[in-house]
Length: 394
Image (cartoon, rainbow, N blue to C red; front, side, top):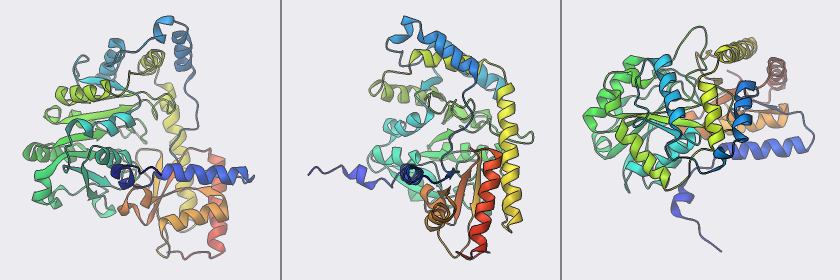
């Protein structure tokens, strides 16, 4: 009876909703599902953060509308954390904006700069809000293929001149979801030079910077000279502190870009619940032991999965960061069919690569968000599927 907008119809299906639906149906049928799909940490939020929320929630002052710009104390905590972690100096009054999770900020940002028909340069495969936010703002995503042959980095030289002239934004995400790829400062320098030459805004999604292994420390784009002239960076407490459901993150960088996003948000929401902001301060200023334990946990899970897959004859490269493993699947099937097969035959949920974009076809993403014994069980189930010759192997 009611027709939805053309923008809504133009959005690709949000894959994680489909996966969640399939998972609920399978579990309702009593099946023992191993969920390696969505990237939601299975560890609880550290107790000291929960205690900070508990104490703050009892203060009536936190029950009122929050400030749109976030508490000054939270912005100062973010400033201190960025300085300690990346040696990047930020002005807490003009270069930092707390968000209701980095996802909403990333999705809302194009509303500040995209006009009808403008382009966003969007990596493919990618986190879906890069495309969705562009489409909601009336823009057009121009896909930048992330290919294994190029280390899953976009090739800026292949972007046509007529696209560069109409492009307003370029999205980066390293450490990368879904591929697990990383980027170094030389690549960021190339991006900054490209952005300045073509008058394009750089959006850096750094949500996975603290999930890294074997001493590797991912860089911030803002560490590169000149980055604050053209760039805004998004970060989150979700993965670093196991706070996915709390919805707290921030944007930082160029003060004009931060201010424009703040103006969009002031017309859409009323800020983050103040008690959660105070819990965020506790997280950012708290001990590092929980983060170190988290890295060790995910590294052990990563190594267990890689060893298991290699024992089955699969060639898999261990990621240096994120808690995802990006796996090339047998050539005789596609990623949706293969993922459906694993659910049907092995009660395993994985994410088909095509759900992140057409250049994700031929891969699946596995999230390391179940215990080591469940990962071993998943490998055993996968081995039975292979032995049954349900599909061809490489």
